[in-house]
Every structure is written in C-alpha cells, then in structure tokens.
Amino acid sequence: MKALVHTAPNTFELKDVPKPIPQENEILVRIKAVGICGSDVHGMTGHTGRRIPPIIMGHEASGVVEACGAKVTRWKVGDRVTFDSTIYCNACEYCLQGRINLCSNRRVLGVSCDEYRRDGAMAEYVVVPEHIVFKLPDTVSFHQGALIEPLSISLHAVNRARIRIGDSVVVMGCGIIGLMAIQCARLAGAGTILAVDLNEARLEMALKVGADVVVNPAKANPLQMVLNHTKGKGADVAFEAVGLEKTVNETLSYVRKGGKLVLIGNLAPTVPIGLQ
Image: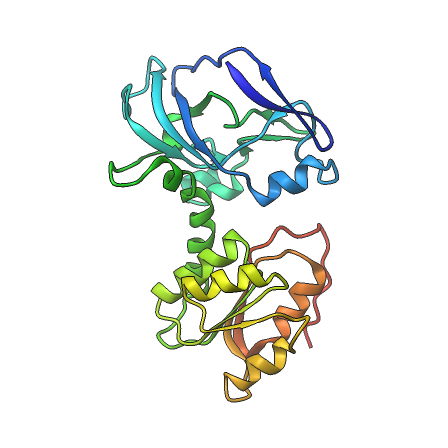
C-alpha cells in the first residue's frame, strides 16, 4: 500500500509499505480522510520525541472497514467508521474505571517514542482494535468524520469546565481546537465569549463560529477587554488552547476569583504557574 512516511525531521516520503494484517480483535480500515494534528506538526521537527522516524503519522481519520479479525463481532466489511486516537487495553484498573487516558498499556496511533511505535492513518490502510471504533452515520461525510477526534478534545474540555448558563468564557488560541471549543461552549450555554489570537484570519473565523468579541494582543490589551466585558471581575471560565508557558499564565490572569481555567494545549513537561 501507499503511505506517507516521516523519514527524518521535516521530511516525508510517499512509499510502498506492507499492507497491515488485522489480528483477531482488530479491523482493517481503508482510509478515506485524514487530518493533520498540531502535534504532528510539532512532532515532525523532532523536538518532541513523539514522532521518531520512520513512522506513519495520523490519528484523526475516517474510512471503511476492509477486513475483520477472526474474533471481531461489532463490525462488518463496508461499515463507515472513525476511531479513537488512543489505543487502550480495556483490561487494566484504569480502563475498568473508565479512565482510559491513564491506561497502563496506552498507545497512540501515529506515534513513535522510546516506549513504542504504532503506525497511523496517513496511509491507504490502518489497523485498529475494534473497541476504539465508532460508526459514522450516512449523514456524516468522511471529511467530517476525520474531525470527530479533535472535536472530542474540545467537547471534553468544555464538559470538564461545567459551564453554567450565562457564564463568561475566554478562549486563548483559535486554531481548530480553540474554534471547536468556542462552538461547544456556545452550545453549553455560555454568555459572552471572547477569543484571543494573533492571527486575524483565525479571529474572523472565531466570530463566525460563535465568539462575541475577538482580541488581537498585538493591537489591544486582552486583559482589559476581558474586564470590560465582565464588569471588572474576569471570566468565569477560560480555555488555553496554545500550550505555551506565556499564554498559560496570561490566560490565568483573565479568570475571576473562583473561576476555572482548562488547559487544552500540549504543554512542556514543566510550566511554572503563579498561584497567588
């Protein structure tokens, strides 16, 4: 099969590689659409240690079931599907508690590191365990299906925040995750939503998907804008979707006393945060 292989920092090659064979509890998916995650962009430079070449990246995807392992019971050839990016064992104590992100045997599609290597979906086919697969309704396109994984991140963040009707919300960073967080916050009942980003095109998109106020820090003071729209108190809830030490602490400054800050962006191993 054809696959886009990450062969060196900032280097990809379209190669012929062996077509994967599903094990007894796995399915083979013929890929119809695949997304490029921000973590893929960061990983291709080599500085994260999470995309060690050679590796087939890609964990945001959708497709059609091509073949099923001998013990697969939930899927059949021809099913339209998407799948989780996390491969969890479904047997350890954390999985049994529903805390699959803490799985003792956790793997991520399209990731290679010191501990493991698992090829992803930037290829004609990918193999995944049947228990991480979800059916796509006929009304959902394959391109939309590939966006379900990043959407789940934003939806989970908003669910964690437990937004109340009318809460003021700030979203720092208007990439795809931040834009989806805006939409999810609006559906959750948020009041005024402020979006912060240095990119004007992203700010325009933020307005289209539900933000009430947009702020470019190069042109205006975001903290003052937040205070102006929250009667001087600060935001009830803020989402940080950039992942830098600077933006984490800036976003924290936008939150009122007793408010909530949800960190979505990928962070460095150590990020100092002022607590007083």
